[in-house]
Length: 453
Image (cartoon, rainbow, N blue to C red; front, side):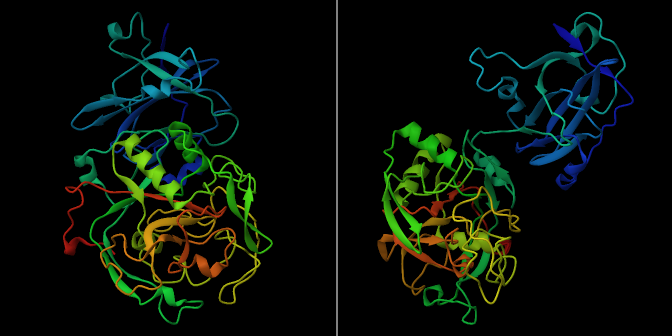
């Protein structure tokens, strides 16, 4: 049965441009597509029936608060479409089906609306007969139940591989997902930086020098966070990869290999959103090979220079936020201190995301929680290291570099320049990984004067 959307002037519809204002909105839509979308909103009131909020244009990669005012738990219905040049309109069909419903029953209503070219009008016309006969369009609207909370956000996902043309349009801090379950990728700008630590940095070690300039000539996407347990579990289930039953556990101040431990049982509580641990460098390489097949695009681990460049985000201090650190900013062994800083909490395991906000380039969790495998072979210092951000394939390749420190680490190992080494085949319950993505040749052409440090 086709229902009619009526207009009601008592409803306040707000266009709030900044994502930071969503705390004041009851219903927000986030557009994760790489092109603008149009969203139509409606809901029911006991006395007035269907109420139309009209159409809203939501810019690419942004959120808009579309309803302001208490919803008191009533259901809200949405329809969304976007114009992706040159292929035309995309409709959010996957959103119309309730996840897990074996019969595929749609959770929503067929409603009549005006086209989005008149998107900001409030309509009072009652539709008589069919939508088409009355000059309206019939669309299926997805049902949302905000509940009694003050905020509700509907996410419009868009998991399709980037085309070369779309890659060329990417800007720093743009993000994308290219397949269901793929990590969220954020674009890191091209630029130059000084890799390693200055000689006067507290707790500096000899393997952090000599300090040298590295030029990253092409932007590259890096995952905003570490690969999660759920993401890794999907890979294991899809490939049938054997799960090791031993992992090195940090206990009583030393590393002990325990049987019965794996990424599913690392020795402390986790859920699917936690970063995966108890994975070797080879496990991580198998994951990125599988991910590349799923997305049809070249995924890989971060290179060591890329890791330091992305997590520094243009800074030269020991941590991107400054020269000191507390356990309110990152997850590490709070019984230990750095450069006279305070002691703090020792959580003895991972958390979903440290309290620290993302760095200026949008990277989360670049410090502590879990250390990260990178591609490079181990070398005891930077003598002869690449200066173009490429993988260092010479050295001891039976061991690989890990970066970032972990929940078990001394805070000095959370510094931007700090390096650690581990056997490539080893599995630790504080080491995971992050992925990167290589852009096409056309998208990667950057001249030296375009470098953005």
